[in-house]
Length: 411
Ligand SMILES: [Ca+2]
Image (cartoon, rainbow, N blue to C red; front, top):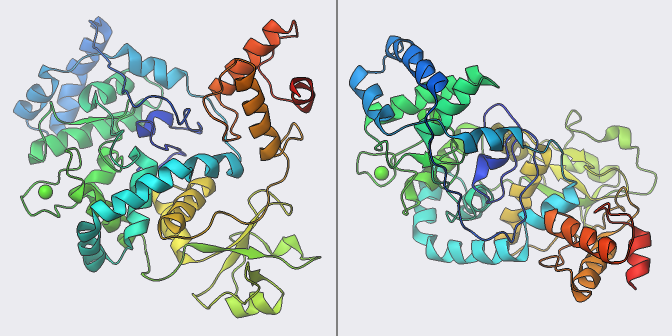
């Protein structure tokens, strides 16, 4: 979990996309990158200077030396840190990836496979199985993308490089403390390039604060194939963030004609019956049951979907404060429990295209010989490459940008 910054992960080796990045192409092969250290005198000097700072914070010299025995400077980490794309996906694109049919199907399979474990976790921490599974699905695609970058190397590289150096040095000290506690060996402590670790991608400080030993073997093991400790740790985190069993994160609602959108936003809270009196209804037309004080949010404006959100929405924000992330977790959990897709339509994008337009564009590009690797309506690197290829062959200006004109030309 990233405590301080907006990160959208969606199963691509998680904090791979820290800051404000959107998800990587979801169909990218599940091959995790291999990063190899290279000699770097400046890095070595930094490690030597860091050693007394670490020991002053209670890290034993033997722990430090064992941790750094196999560590080194990872240029690949710096490359990833510099190449982060600073943009935010629309909720529509975000949900298309977060709750893709594949992620929903895999999550339902995971719920079956780990049903007894998740039930035991629910009994202890009061967090429903589908919610824990949704976090797992978003953070590491149910454990298939946990990250294989050695954490001491990645965090020390980022601490040395300077950009957000203080933050990563703090995480590095926490990582050394984890090693000192004996929960994991330096060789097995791997994660994303930015140091998010294990099935649910805890950064080291979150691990120290919230991880639990659910299996009872004396180690809080979020790294190995068995996800039990990681899933219980996620439930513990949500529980301590105020999760209330049985309360929805939110429900999709219908707003009455002429609804004053000044009433929307997380700052305005009313009882569901008060909202009902104002004409706000569940999608089946009934008043929303009273789950406690609620706000109404319209993430894409009045022409997109609306949600009535409850205290559990805020609990998920403690995990990650980005609104799209919270809705993504919440909606995926609903889908895993058998709920329907979002029923409202989404407004056209900045190019005036609806998701149906974008899906048609992808299908037609693929049929024309420029494979977009699927047609989910999310314009990512594969679709942009296909557009560029088509534009090049057709003698058009090569922009890689979707448009209604391009779609018309392909028809
Ligand atoms: Ca354990």
